[in-house]
Amino acid sequence: MQTQSIDINVDVGEGIGNESLLLPYVSSCNIACGGHAGNATTMRKVVKLAKNHRVKIGAHPSFPDFENFGRKPMEMPCVALYTSLKEQISDLMAVIQEENTILHHVKPHGALYNMAITDVRIATTIVEVMKSIALPVKLYVPYNSVIETLALQNNIPITYEVFADRNYNDDLTLVSRTEKNALIHDADAMFEHVFYMINNRKVRTITGAEVEIKAETYCVHGDNLQAAVLLKKLYENLGAKAIKII
Image (cartoon, rainbow, N blue to C red; front, side, top):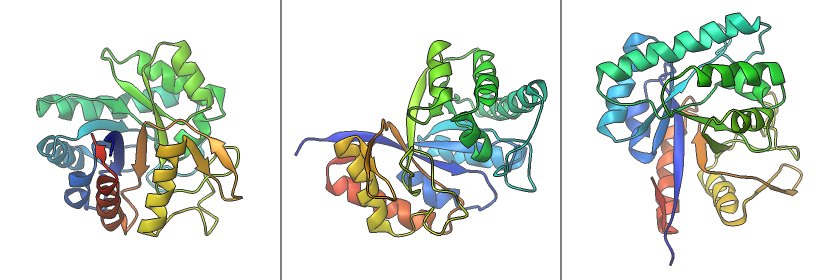
């Protein structure tokens, strides 16, 4: 059996407090840095845990919106959004430097991430923030998106991300969280969802269609109350298929 390898990432530092249960089963993490959740204390705690588990550290900036957990679109001037995102990432980078480790990537959160798929103004702002970081930091992006195109045009290194615990529409957008089938709660269903993408480079959508997709890192949302159980089972099932998490 030929060994394959993938990256699994998880969103952390969002106030759930389950990081110690999640990080043993992933290879990268996205740390909330003050936009939708998180503060200096939570960032420091999670950075230390990630470092101990040899998990790659990413920033998870958001619209500055604690009230709605960053999941509601916001109308902001580009300059204000740029300043907020830059401050969030800088705050995490300060903690990372104190802990003598490195920032591996940036992954926008929630509504910001979803809007950057199609919104040139939002995507451009994120790319400009990436250009301001004086390090070779990767940007996690969805396949066939505006932000993917702009990042490549601006020589920003990207990693294609898909979602292990979310269902997809035919246009590769995520099924809205207002719909009952938005999230995948069953461990076996999640494994089949991921394994199909690994093997076929396609995703099965909610209509049963098979749509081409690029996937280099697979996300599990850390705020899912079953996240620890789902991640452990996914890790075990992938291992049984000789797929390493690196």
